[in-house]
Length: 369
Picture: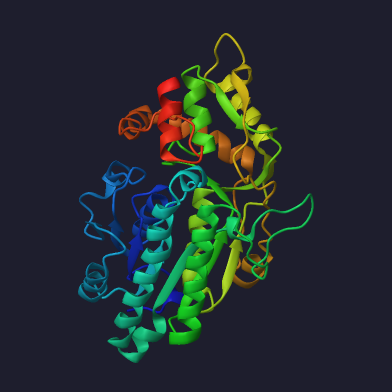
């Protein structure tokens, strides 16, 4: 087994949530570079085996449908496959859904992460010293754990946690468990906190694919509040490259903030998408005419921005895509993959408004649509 710093080729990774958006992109890239991936995914609404169909006959990809809260299953997979590292994507991730069902987020994001950590701790105890030294547990987290910024400043790995949504609180708790398992038990953990991802295979509850698909169907393009909430946008393959680099060269116990250096307000972002659609799929009226401002999300953080200096200087990673280039690639992917879009939208989600505070309110909103 090669050391993690030699790259991914020849290594066996347990990837959780590898049928989700970022997980799919990571798995496709890792397998193409010679890694063997044991892909554990529960296949909830956002997990999609169709996204991984190109790997169906690939012996370096082993798909297992299962729950990260199932400790015996996780321990068996770690042992049977000689896993040399865990890359933990699996999470409930949509802020609006966390407002409606915070208990689901605690179970998956907190208890699931704890189960994985405990399973990894037991696995490490049975490894030879060289393999134990090479093992890594990488927690893929979010910038939302840091709370909201004002008009200036950026999040760094030392920014204090101040989560404002149930989703962010659940990820903050899981990050703290990761830190604690390194400090208390010596589990060689790594944590990455990324900015907003976008790109191929993203489930259409998130802003960018929702806007693209709604626009193509002539539906309204809802923007929360005044549209001036700012996010740093990170193309998903850039994020995956950063994760690979952290796996290869990151120091155990360290945290790395990953961003695209692409700040845009939600309104600017939607207008950019509309302009791209005007160019590649023109219609009689500008797509921007479909923009509609709606009531803001409860507790909506005003601004996020990432300082990626640490990963850039220490590990040599830098985002390759500007937001305009990345958005055009994303629009073109959704236009070319309408069958995928139709299939993932056929499982009960109709791009209705989420985050109204309870499941009953969501149902009422859907009935009125």
